[in-house]
Length: 113
Length: 111
Image 1 (cartoon, chains in turn yellow, orange):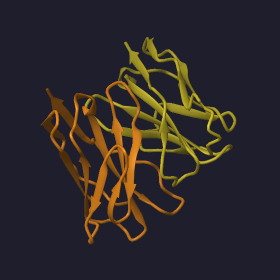
Image 2 (image 1 turned 90 degrees about the horizontal axis):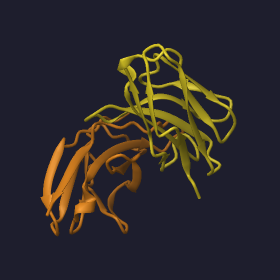
Image 3 (image 1 turned 90 degrees about the vertical axis):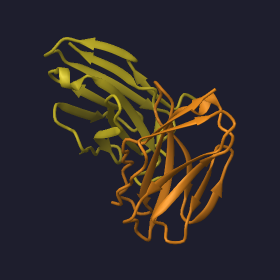
Image 4 (image 1 turned 135 degrees about the vertical axis):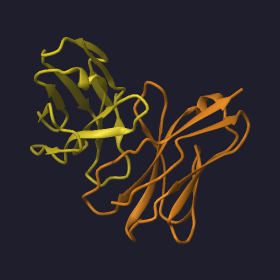
């Protein structure tokens, strides 16, 4: 049982480059989330998808776009990476918005130079 | 959404009991208290949830007083592997809850 799988685990980008972070869950969860975590900080919500076909902005959505490709997959895209987007990105899923337990992936460590 | 306040950091030694208190003065009637644990270089994982009084599982105990304005996560006889960041979250039993994490409490367990 893989749970939540994120790819890649590490990435270095040059300023202005674009990339997509992939996330897939195999728990048949309805809700999926993208967070970023900066050193010494908690997790801040970027975007979430309460159910397949819907996406909503979180606390820090600027500079990002998301796609809920199907029930399993929720991708995060950086169209023009900036050094301020250097962070660790976590994808999570839960059975439903409001569910007790969210399951997290292992994270993607992104550095923008 | 009730705001939570918890200590930024704590230190302990192996074999001691650790208690981390979270303040949530504006908790609503339908809100639950949830705790997550995050090891270095990993995503957070759910460890315990409670509504009132005491909840215990294989990882921790959660104590919630009658007024529910605070809660205490208790880790019995910690080991080095309990070194982690612990997050207190308040969630509504309704459908609009999105897991919202503060800075958490960084617990360091020393030999």
